[in-house]
Length: 585
Image (cartoon, rainbow, N blue to C red; front, top):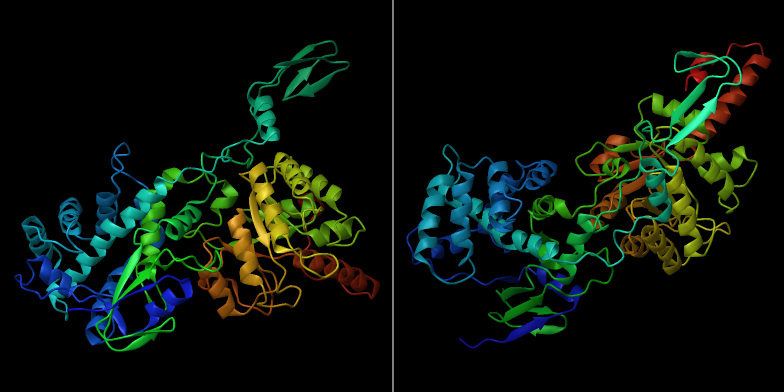
């Protein structure tokens, strides 16, 4: 049969074609082989990106299977390779998925799926037919209202996609070379480690000028005391050394799907006349969709997993399997970065303004604290957001760094428009013990730093201090601009190497969900007493919630209210730490 072939290459046009119900996958050849025991039967029975009642029923079977999986546990399971030397991705991801779904004989399942995957998209092989028959027998459920063989076909489809597309994604991402600049330790960190592990002076000699007591021992005047300069310091949250590839695995996968996807072309047939990208498509025409089409922004999803309203239901599961299988490429996560991972409870980050407030919050069980630029500035008698508190910010970081606290620093816009100067301050903050920074694009004049300039600051910081968690903040909502330019800025900051994205002022649930789903980096939201609750934010995909200056402002308010109550002859109410409690912080 003669038919016209149309090629669609623009991203927006490919998305539109994927959403067109008139374009369906090429129908498989007539099912001439025996039911439940041949490749032709399998191709005709699996769920497809299509429409109609049969499609809806088969897709529901797949969604039911996927609903039984915990994505974070799936990623963790995929990280454990039985044979690290071989690292054959296809059987590994199939075996991992089969085990997670509770299928019997995962090893046998993986072997059978390998045979099926070799001819799944075309060709014949008696061994594959035999593998189909074996898996249908093994994976057909009992006691269900659905056709057991159709359920088995849906299960085989899931496993074949893992063997083919997911495993290819793993192989191609793993073959991607690390950026040339990755892996360098900042000089300050190198010096810190040398002084800690191999100091130039290993023993300090001291003489008691008068009687004293050290470490429970009485020291008489004139006694010689030898001090071990190599003594191990108490455990503190120091940044992990940069790995061979400082990119998060999620970033690596996103770039692989964008630049070298496992599926480069999607084939669709027009079930009826339609129109795509200004071109008339006749019923029966073949349409080739370019899955490598460049997206308008880095935030737009690669096309490998389809596009709304027909998105692959296994996208998150495939990405979890791939991320787990690539765990050996993941930089060693710092304790602070780990708190932002999916599968970890939502990070509520309270913000301190001095050592006492930070220590009090840590004593209450908060795993990490941030600093508040308003609190630091106000305590020093300086305005916030004016770029005049660099010294006070660094001084507080150095005081906090002498403790075991895990903390991140609000450094406003970096206190400079020069990316190298911002990176130099970031080095000093990291050397002081900071696990992360906030870097905002809002300016003192109420405007926004140009996107390219703020992205350059982020890139400079990550090049200088790869292990420092950079929370890239955009003030589009904070300054009342709303949606305008937000996605473009976040996409640029993600591309520049940020570790997290912060959108203070954003409180609209649908918009929060949209941003959290569009970007692979963890989303940080500023808590609002009138906004969504913590549970609601977590359900929307938020990974971190900051309290900002709320605690500092509340503390000032309580201090004034307490003084007013005493002046008016009333007893102060509320919790008050004792003198001893504060001394012990």
